[in-house]
Length: 175
Image (cartoon, rainbow, N blue to C red; front, side, top):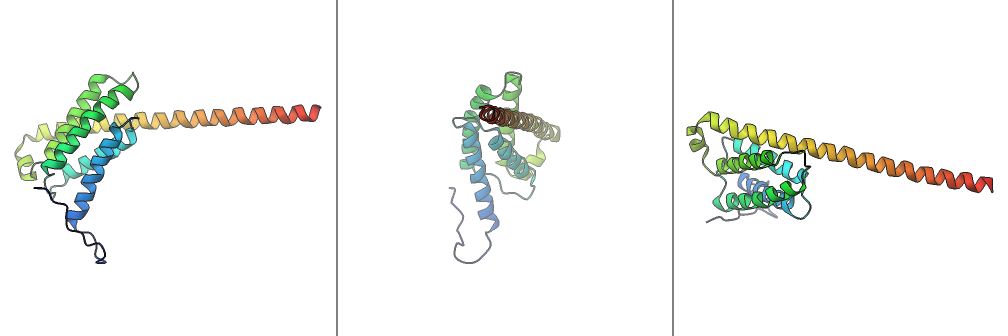
């Protein structure tokens, strides 16, 4: 049974490692769920992917609980569909599916003891991380590209506003 770690709120104590881990897992679940809600959020997905990779690579970690493993995997299903619907057409849908499969595999690795992961084919584990990293980098690059485009649109709108203002000023001086 999963239990929320006992809190030291009001004790003036630093959070325990279990509390920090619980907060991180919960935050990652929320990022994944945010990425899958309504407007697809590539930033939320990238941040969740960074945490998942970091957690999986930590050999001193506690295994992710079944509850949070299942919650993350359920969130991935909705995020995957949102990504398929929202990412640009030039990004191959098979690559999206492959990326989410790698992410799901990482989450499964996080849910097992690191001693069990160590017994797996290390080539397989490295490939899971590599595919997930490629996917994360692609999503990050698309995010950056979208940000550049958004800034370009805002700059164009500012220029148009300035041109209209200059024309008004020129028109009022001519009158």
